[in-house]
Image (tube, rainbow, N blue to C red; front, side, top):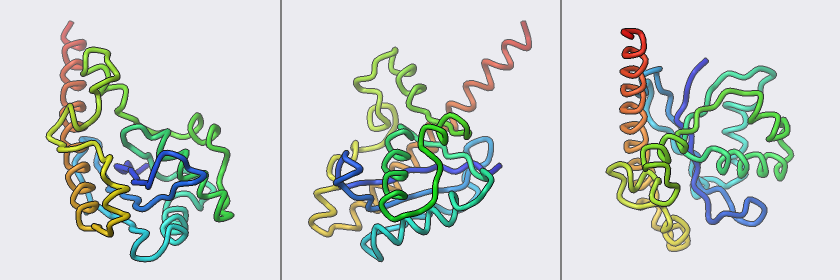
Length: 181
C-alpha cells in the first residue's frame, strides 16, 4: 500500500461554512523519503468542487483502500474532506468508519511527546524549521496572494518530511536497542 504525505489548506475551521483551497500530497517510501514530486490541487485554478472531485477520484473512489495518508492532525483534514464529499454528492464511507478501519499515520501525537507532553507549542512551526503556523492562509487567499500560499505549502511539506524522517530514524534506533537487550 502506498504512503502519502497528505494535507489541505482551508479558509477557516468550519467545514460547513469554510472552503478547501488546496489539497496537497506526495508519495513517500517507508523511510519518509519522497518517491514523487509534491502535488498541489488549487481551487483558484479551477474550483473547490473540482479539486474535491479530483482527490476523490484519485484516492477515495475505489472499493478497496489503496493509500495510507500520513500527516499532522489528519482528523481535521479528513473531517473537512468528508464533509465536502457529502456536499458534492461523492460516495464515501462514514468518516468514523473510515478513520477506525483504514490505516493512517498522524504525527501530531509524536509532536506532543517531543514537546515534553505539552500540546501548546507542539506544532511543526515550533518543532522544525517551519516559519509559521499557517494562520495567514485565509488572508493571502482573500488578497489573491496565491504564490505565498504555495510557498508556505512547500516549506511546510519539507518541514514535515524532515521531522518524519528523524522520527522514523529515532524509532528504529529504539527498536534496535530493544533487540540488543
